[in-house]
Amino acid sequence: MDGLEILEYTGPDYRPVLDFGAWRVAYLNFSDRFDPEKADTLERHMETDEVFVLLEGEATLLIGETGAPCPMEKFKTYNVKKGTWHGILASRDAHVLIVENADTGDENTEFMPYIK
Image 1 (cartoon, rainbow, N blue to C red):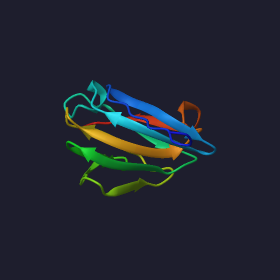
Image 2 (cartoon, rainbow, N blue to C red):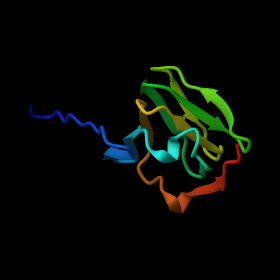
Image 3 (cartoon, rainbow, N blue to C red):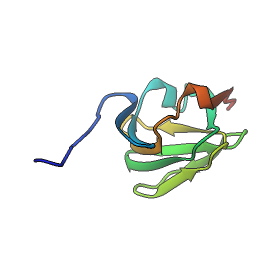
């Protein structure tokens, strides 16, 4: 159809599917780095908030320097504010929608070890 794009991503890990102007839409699906037994990193974006919406499966946001767990509920919007340490743990069947600034990347993101 003219004027309509239909996008999806069903592979592993994080993948942007649409950048438009200042914003990006991406999917996060299970991969080892989101496995509750293997996750080892928290991050914070210094120039943007990041929005997470759980669509399928189970996921838990880790918030703050200690990685305090925040279990996610399907279809609720979780806005991680700019400069907040965070990470995510995901079940093998998890699908999470992410909305963030299109220029979010390593150059404006900081990383630290997540110690369980």
